[in-house]
Amino acid sequence: MAGFQAFAIGGSAMLAARYALPDIGLAALGEMAAGIKDIAAATKLPFIADGDDGYGDAKAVAHMVETYEALGVGGILIEDQLRDKKQQRAEKAVGLADEAVIEQKLRTALAVRHSPDTWIIGRTDAYGMLGLDAALRRAERFLRVGVDGVFIAGIKTEQDYERAGKTLKGAFLSAALFEGGETPWLSPATLGEMGYSHVSFPAAVITRTVAAMHSALAGLRAFAEGARGLEPVHDHGGVRAFLDESLNLARWRLLETEYAQADTTSSKGNTV
Image 1 (tube, rainbow, N blue to C red):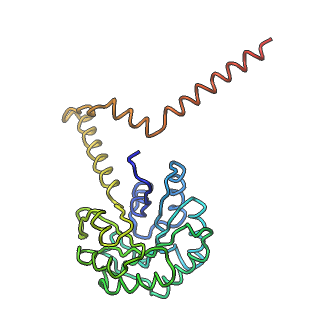
Image 2 (spheres, rainbow, N blue to C red):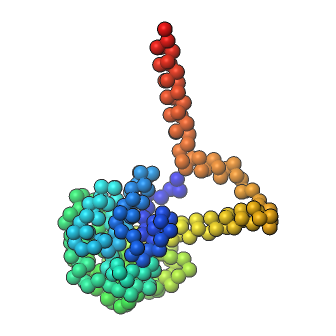
Image 3 (spheres, rainbow, N blue to C red):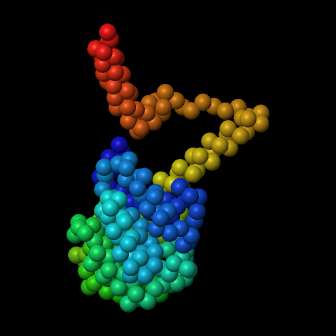
């Protein structure tokens, strides 16, 4: 409804919204797949999803890719951050898988995917621990393996974004932007000029949602305790109408009416 042509399901946002869990390696493939399944059922837009570290060894990666494809995932990110040391923010990463290990996982993902249209994107968290040179080396190795795109997580300066874009020129290069953190807040147009093909905003919706929910609940609590009044939502009718439109309520009401009429006609025809 907002006009986007695709979207991404990030691990942190998914786990926070659905399970109230931080993205620090607590959840497994089953939790992610359950959430992806429900989201996929509610939309026809193409989307990519977080594949974490593949949830284990090569056979686990194969299982994850096959599971995600069956759910309609169009692109899967696989990262090199160690699961038992996983941090929610890329710049805080403290453990990386050996380059040969992540390469084997990416090769496995490419080999088992049923459709070449299912993109495999290699993510490296090396930037925060080892610097841009190490991150670029890993990204280049991922590309030699044959991945469809690469993502260097946690880049902290505009100069490093620009350098990565030049170094990996011609590759499908992804970026993720966060507000209020250590990463620069650049426009998609600026990143496009630097050579980036895809930009996601993993926390932009959920942080605003949480802030709105917190404000609403705090106001309702104060109202219930008699501490202060509660102003009605501005343009409540319009907001309610938008919610109904989001839920496609008119379609369901139409079906309800049509089947009710059919039932009535059928009942009259069977009357003796």
